[in-house]
Amino acid sequence: MAELSLIAVPSAVLVGLETYHATAVLPDLARSQAAVVHTFQVIDTARALDEAIQDAERGERGFIITGKTEYLEPYSTGIKETPDKLAQLKKLSEDNPEQQRRLQLLNEQINAKLSELKRVLDAHQSGGFDAAGQNRMRSSIPLSSGEKPPQPERERREITGKDNDLAQLSGPQCAPLRSLSERIRW
Image (cartoon, rainbow, N blue to C red):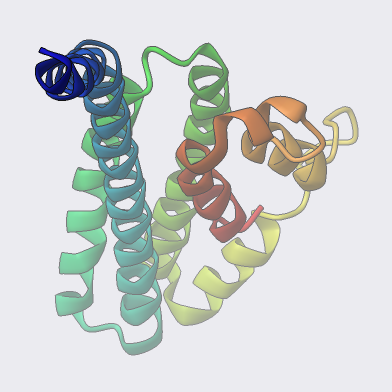
């Protein structure tokens, strides 16, 4: 009987540990895995948004420099994909109010950048290379004396969360936003 208890007690302890593991640890592991998958979806979407903007910039530059219309294809593709990717990013981060706030700021900056690209292309098409260059230079200067000059560092800190403790709490999910906003020229 004593020999049986030497086998039964450790077996019961092992069964208890396995039961605890199955009911407490595994669900946490599944939630952690889902959070990692979600984070990678956010990162991939932010990268795709960045690539769409880069395509638009490259296409615009290529057309301005060469005058060849085939460079307008990546521009058009980038312009078309940018709102879709931004909407996907907003959808993926709808559970995070801080990221939603930052995405709104980023959206404003993206719209300003895309408007600048279009203005420069329009200037090139109506007045050639020199007109495009003049338009690009004017786009970074405030238009009227009553207008406040852009504050790129303040806007960059707002979007990226630098100087903000919440950015450290958000960790890798904020990294794509930081990278994208640093890449867009203010």
